[in-house]
Image 1 (cartoon, rainbow, N blue to C red):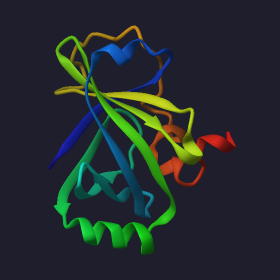
Image 2 (image 1 turned 120 degrees about the vertical axis):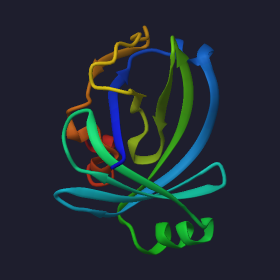
Image 3 (image 1 turned 90 degrees about the vertical axis):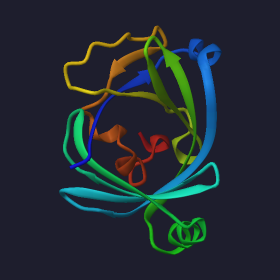
Image 4 (image 1 turned 120 degrees about the horizontal axis):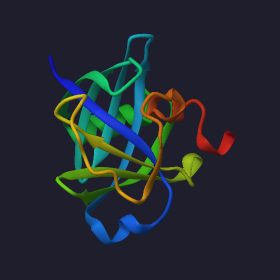
Length: 155
């Protein structure tokens, strides 16, 4: 089973910008959000992926991801999604031994900036950057699957 162990934090300042290693524009939406799983399609950097993730709270979830043809993903985004399309820029930001994913949302979620770090174990020690604040790993309103139904602009 594929497992993702990830912690998510709100970003509180712009000090991360000097540590950016790469950036990509992403569009993603959900084909289904079920009580026990979500099914997402994403296009980023010219590639498309289908992702299935368990809908459990906390930092540990089952996750499966498969590359699919971009044209198929574009058709899915246009015709098969439930909720709105999430538009964001993802920055890869170095802090210590970890490469963080920092998402700066656009559109209906503009103003929301979150950072995630993937870990090898739930107890792994990692450096907490000075540009993160409150941890929101267990708050479902910050999950992308929730943001398509209840965007940041409506909070």
